[in-house]
Length: 243
Image (cartoon, rainbow, N blue to C red; front, side):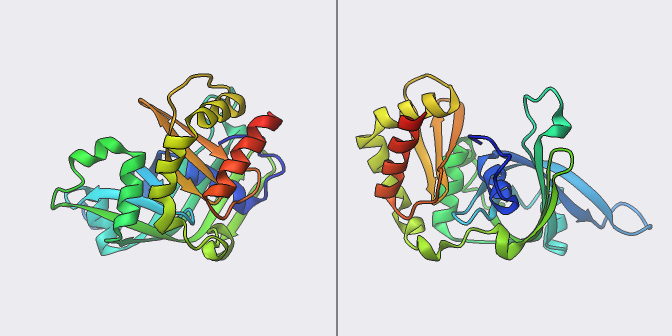
């Protein structure tokens, strides 16, 4: 995430953390292993998200968490934004509750694989499937005294103002990488302090842009949402200039 979180509304802060995260803890209901009823089961998963910030998981049928959610689709995902803080409990974290549903939408799969290119090795295995989590609510803890429950209607970004993002994203990413490489490097350097060259756009949504350079990743959050590629380029220029 980029920028201070102090004045960001709860729903927007939840989305920032979800969009910036590459991994999360997944909790499912485990029904096997005892006669004393179901038990919670937590595992580490790689995550991406849709343009509205709904979580995406690429998981194997052989994994216990997949067996669990096929029997009971209710899940919880913990997103941790406290890395690098001397006092982790002062940092933001989000516990999202929702229902996991398998999806065959190729645009979402492509979005996941741009975020996790190493997953391409097993993405076509017959036992791996993409799941999209339909959020029900989220619990945000953003430091001492800042605790909020956010319902799904507020949590998810309303794409009606930017209806073409899903279809236009691949072409927009290509245009950014071909025509605005210097701007991407400048923006990452000025906004995140990571002064290096060779950053590539890998994801674009109304609230920001995801980038990768080798094994490193970065997320730049827009000051205000945009509706199209032209708006994203203009926003990056303005934010880099302001910085």
